[in-house]
Length: 365
Ligand SMILES: *Cc1c(COP(=O)(O)O)cnc(C)c1O
Image 1 (cartoon, rainbow, N blue to C red):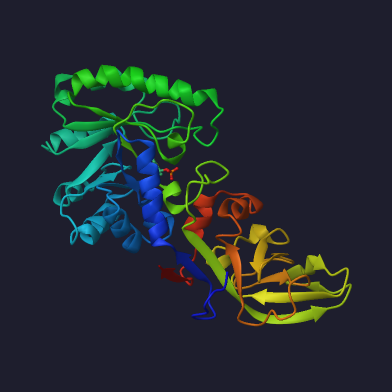
Image 2 (image 1 turned 180 degrees about the vertical axis):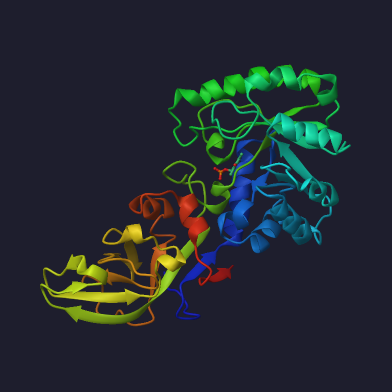
C-alpha cells in the first residue's frame, strides 16, 4: 500500500466508510434488535466528531457514552442531524442530574441511590437500569431486589434493563450462558414492575457468542472500530484505523554496536536502521521495546532498542534498498492487525486506540 505523505508526523487514518459498513454488518447479526453504538471516550480515541455523524447516517439512533459531559457534546454534535437521538450515559447521575434533564440524556441507573435520585428529581423521563449478573462492577445486585420492587420504583419510566458479559472475550466460557440465564430470569421478574421493559445484553463480544440472546438493543463499541471482538478480529469486520509514522533517518551500524537508550539491542551483523517518528508520547507503548513490528515497503521489520518518547528504531536490513527518508511505516492497520500489535505490547486493542496521542495527525476518509 502506498501512502501519501502529508507531514512528517505520525498519522492515524480512520476509514469512515468502514465504520458504516461495520455498523450495518453488526445490525444484520441481530435483525430483531435495535443496534446502538458505544461512542464513549471520543469513540475509543478515534474521534467522535467524525464518527458519530457517520454512525447516524448509517442508521444508528441510540448512542452510549460514559459521562454526562460526553453526552452533552454528542447532543450538540448530532443536533444538526436530529434533535431526538437517544443518548445514554453508562455511569448515571451523581451531582449532575440537572444536566441529564437539560440535555435529555438517558441515564443508566446502577444503584438504588441513583434510582431514588432519578425518581425524586421528579423525572418521568426515560431511564435504563443496569443489573449486574456476574461482572461485579457496575449495576444492581440480587440483594437490591427488595428495595427495587416497590410502588415508588414502579413509577420510574424504565425502558431497558441492561447487563454486561464479564467473559465475552472467551466464547467457550460457561459463565456467558450463566449470565444470560440469570439475566433472563430477572428480566421476567422486573418486566412485571416496568411494563414494556426491553432487554439489552450484548456489547461487541456478546454479538459473536455462540448463544441465542433475545434482546431488543445491542451496544457494540470496539467492533464498529474494526477490532476484536475477541483476541482475533472477525473476518466480516473492516479495518477502520491505521497508524503510520515517517522514517526520519536511515543509518548503517556494525556488529557490536547498540541503539537507543541503554543500548538494549546489539547488532550481530551489519545492520541498517530506520529511525521513525513515533514514540510512547503518541501511544506507541514502551512495552514494545525490542518487541514491536512495523511494516515498511511491504516487509515486516522488528523494532530494536528501547522505544523513546518521540522515536522508535526499526531494523530495515531486509527491506528493499530504495527505502528512504519520508517513507511511512505502518504501526498497525491493514497489514499489522491492531490485536497483534496490542498483544505484543501486553494489552488489548481498546487500550491501543484510547492511548493514541494528541500529536498524531488524524485523517478521515
Ligand atoms: C464499553 C461498554 C460497551 C461496549 O463494549 P465493546 O466491547 O467495545 O463493544 C457496552 N456496554 C457497556 C456497559 C460498556 O461499558
